[in-house]
Length: 544
Image 1 (cartoon, rainbow, N blue to C red):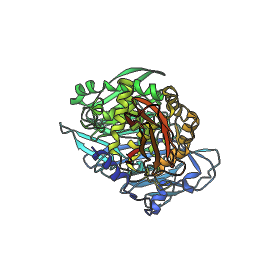
Image 2 (image 1 turned 120 degrees about the vertical axis):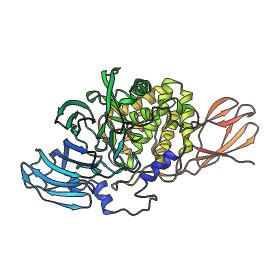
Image 3 (image 1 turned 135 degrees about the vertical axis):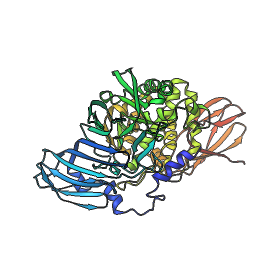
Image 4 (image 1 turned 60 degrees about the vertical axis):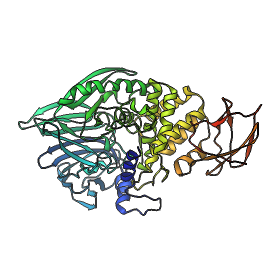
């Protein structure tokens, strides 16, 4: 079942397969906080887009509100070809701009007073890039449903939201007060966006659906979905009170959805237990059917898993536990906590999104089945790990780490749970992350430091080993006598000394390996010995 992770790797590694890969100026302009990005703080997007299904084109306007941090004269806005900027204005005055590839540098006429709030209006149009294999290969998807109705959606996590609309396309800065999204499409269809539906306007042959998000949101999380949708939902009694939950599915899939989506309240109960309150009560929660597998669009999670359990009916762990839940419902909704609530400042740290969310799959099993089920599942997913590249990528170059960020990340966190030895404390750490970094963009270094401080364990070498190298610690061990076992680590960074559990004669014993040989002396003969599988290490028995 490596096809799933290999698919992600193929796309995520398109910029650089090897750490020594040379990057381009375009990579730097997209991936770094340039001078033309640094001086302004994004406050709000007012995005209007009209979709023309027959021509597979769009046109729209984005009014960007920002706060001036330091007074400058040039602002960088990103929009990828073949989309085009048609006009830029500020306070009614037309502005000129120069382009360097997909980065557009707009010369402002009005003085940008420090501390002031300003707006710039950008009109755009074009035929957006068609996603070849969404959600990994980003862009628009133009399909027809079984009744020959248009079925349209976008997904653009890796390639960037600027593949279809102009914005500040860097994860470090999110609009503090959210986004207003107006979707105009043929009146026979329904346009679904993020947040809450504020109004619906009948224009005759078209309709406009006005959606509103009141909380910070990452650019790639903003989405447009158009189809022959039917809507139903319920009110979830959550930790922070009543949460409005809505489902938008193709009309002929309503009954299937009613049955399959019973896992949504199960997901919410499990994740509120482990991670704390759902982070966007103000904006509600939606599950929206789309013509691709699915994506974690904030408050508008998209779904295309064929109303089956597993990953398109398959178990990524090979244990059977992966067929006890709908992968897309659980995984993509888990991103509401890790990706949407807590967002990486740089895509090099995307393991914060994917590692924690892949780990959430096992915590869902823990909540609804057992701790043993969770352990078996996450250990089973190790078969997807390739250790081809570190799971942290290259900073300031829009370069993600290896696709191992998913299940290597999950197994690193599962290993940490063993080291903490206190599930109450471990749960407090996970909830604390979502509380203390609530609606923030963060770095891996911040997350690493936080977990070290809250667990009371110096994890600096642990993080170096697992996040920044491809080496998996190997425990070499040998029986020296009937009651003695010697052991050491190889394939480790300097000073790596993670303790692990041996199970000797059915009883757990902590040992403390380093790069040097050590010996554990058991009381009585060693009749059976194995290393607890919950620790993500390799092992080799050395015969004397």
